[in-house]
View 1 (cartoon, rainbow, N blue to C red):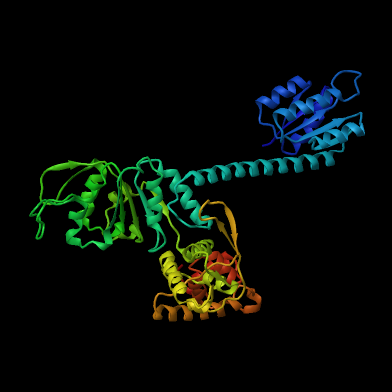
View 2 (cartoon, rainbow, N blue to C red; view 1 turned 180 degrees about the horizontal axis):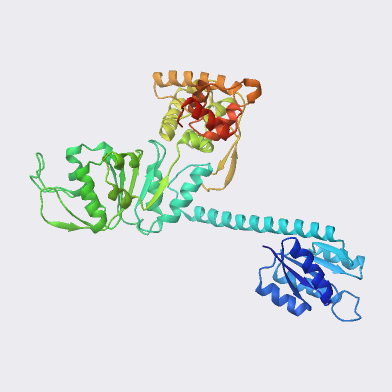
Length: 494
């Protein structure tokens, strides 16, 4: 409930104003002198002040109210003030309004007019405070990004910005972090940022791709092995945990770790202790573990492929990285980065790049850009260089400057991507032909003009919009509730 301070030497006026305002949902405080008013403003959370202009008997100059106004302004520059007086002086009213008085009314006042002014001013003041808080938060965030080591990451989307903000926030701690997201989305870049901005940045940073190691060698790679521990082990070797002692260990594709390795990993996370393969000597290390996976670990836990206790040890904080097709504002800044300044793009090519679903995420985009540059016939890359087809309408893309992190707008000429192989190129052509046809009809018509959607229509729209219900509903001309009812009717699961 907003609190309004009423300052008037006439108790009857204070009582009348208090009653009117309280009947309309406001809390009021009253005082009878400028000194009391300044004390209340300093001690209370005040949303608005209604003040008289004269407090000494037989005084009509307004000088007392003027001094009180300037004193309040000095301590609370944004606080809205309504000036109320029986002795209206136009020159004084103009002066104080120019200095920031929100309103100036004569006595007796009009209740409706005064209430309308109070409501509007409180709403504007609340919005102003909110904007100021957002501006301060944005300034702090930009300062943090400016001073941080972003490890060359390029981004422009709000989703990626939030991931990086969170990564910078938790980098200062030594807790375990689990990075989730699809292959090729940039999980290793987030791991780089976590280490580069941590107190351990000058310590070892060891990366292990669990999915790339043979199962029979996995434990030896992680924990080390003594000579003769297995065929071909001619001498003792340290594992990745020992190599990362005092620093950070990044375990990529952690979902591929076998159960035997999970038991040992859990022990290291709990106690810091382990034994090399073929040894009974217990060793101790202190390592911060960052892990990443594209797997659904909750499903793996339910099926018995992943230990639940290990999951909670790894997942103190989760960084969820969305796929590139949910970070469309990242696409053009990334393309610009991959291609460099020697190439440019036509607007239709930009739109085609932004509209393509990028199932291989940033990795596919990078490879596509390399291919386009190699095969380009001119500095202006076209859709033909990427095997893409036109998409109707151009969508401006806003983002962040990849170097400074400052806001920028990308509807500029930027470079473009490519398919890695002929088969992938053919897949793109087919996909864009379907996308073009769907774009021409779906978002622009309502349910009345396109008719009742069938189950096939809904399934197609779900696939087209990656299961995002709000987008699917919009494309079909339905509300989300109506879409859910039809999905239930047709037995369609999201």
